[in-house]
Length: 229
Image (cartoon, rainbow, N blue to C red; front, side, top):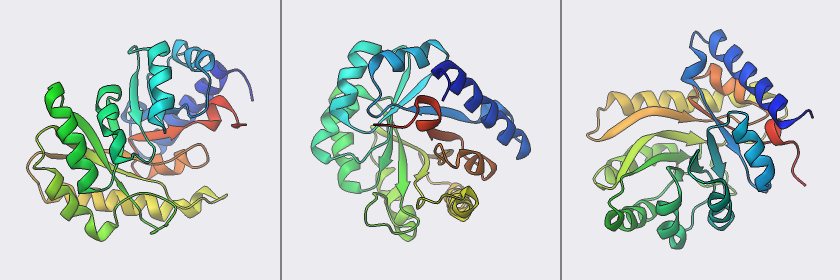
């Protein structure tokens, strides 16, 4: 691995190339730098090299980092969010990408209300029905979205998924295509207060394939910061 600045530049090049291949502009894809277990100095190096969105998996870890790195970047929550952490999440994060139940959404809405905040959220979909991962089943997704759309302090902006891990990115393509098709179906329903502008899918090993299938947010950690300990 090169320096963080070099790694980031290469990831951006790959994003741009994948976007152009799929007939899109490079700026239609936003890079979320996954900073789980990454120390603050290395995060600051990435930010100084132009990284604008950071993704964290744990509320406590993020709280400590946000104090040091601050609000010069946008912070997305991308991990499994426990309901009892909602009160902290609505204060810390600019977007929550992993909402997968009405119970969690209700608690986020309740905690955001006294703050006067409307929290942008993404609905996580578990396309492969993997027990180890969060996410609503595809068949239940529209029903959940209809429920959440009535919560005035949340703003649904799209869908997110984590397909099964494959060493061959092409094997993840059907899952990315399925999420895009589900997003299109929800968009066509024209549900009040629901936007389907974001497709968060693709990580270090398969983000180019995800972009070719329509990703607007890619969550990349290892390709920028190297392997975690």
